[in-house]
Amino acid sequence: MSASHAVVIGLSAVVVAIQDNEAVVLTVRPRDQLAGLPFGPFDPDGHRTFELALRAFVNDQTRFDLGYVEQLYTFGDKGRDAPLADMGSGAARVISVGYLGLTPSAVDTHAPDTAWASCWRFFPYEDWREGRPDALLAMEPALRAWAVTPDQLARARLLFAMDGATWNEDRVLERYELLYEAGLAPEAARDRGEPALPPPLAQALGEPMISDHRRILATGLSRLRGKMKYRPVVFELMPEAFTLSALQRAVEAVAGAPMHKQNFRRALERAGLVEGLGRVDSETGGRPAELFRFRREVLGTRAQSGLNLPLLRD
Image 1 (cartoon, one colour):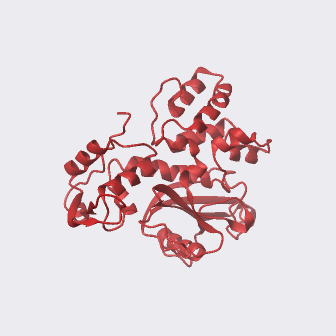
Image 2 (cartoon, one colour; image 1 turned 60 degrees about the vertical axis):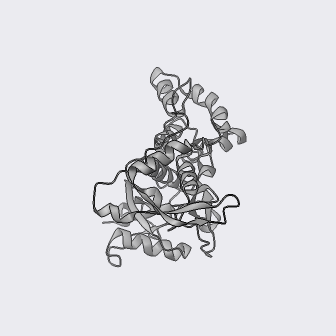
Image 3 (spheres, one colour; image 1 turned 120 degrees about the vertical axis):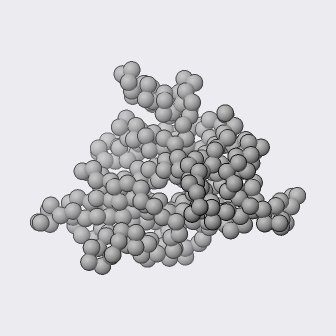
């Protein structure tokens, strides 16, 4: 195969943690560019599996050892690598395999150009914990100006909860893809050679990332938000011992929505996923709270459900 037609398989990692009650993602900033996700090439001669390759280059770039990992999606659209996520090969086409990684601690990596960043820095309109985000108010006129057909208007209303539509927190990727299609995502202007959006609107739309890394991040957040409801993946973000309040705040941080406290605890009890440890956390700053653990042993004994999320809007 000639170099001009070569295909390189790249691996990208969406690594999520909870830090100060915020959902954060591990980012790298190669050669003074925009922030990106940890990424690197798959070497068929040197790597036995995609996952082992991913773990190796994430550790190399960030000094961070991945814990829970699952494959997300393969991104192969022609032109998706603009600007090219440098894989060190000069290849004309990059096929990217995205992974989601979860860790119970946003540890300092001590690696240059590496940082934990709030997920909502890239998607400010996704955080509804304090009510409808101001970012959506700034975006709505631009969305209406783009939606010149009934189908476009219906999609915008459904995805961005306009005109009384209900917000669906799981559809992070669909919202980003609509913004790209509408020319409103900063990456769309970059890739099409169009002028940048005015600062107030650009700020509401979120910070861009290199290549198509924000699309990959949106895919990871969609997967995580949806999967919490049918698999207990949220416990991969928790330490061995935690309070129920800390668990609720972690769920809210990922979902970007407030939970009903009593109903959340009833849902936990019904699911049988946690067990009291018989001791309390005296460092909460208030009344000591009981510590719990995730009953990981139940995963191998029965089909396991996730958490019913009792959103306050419900």
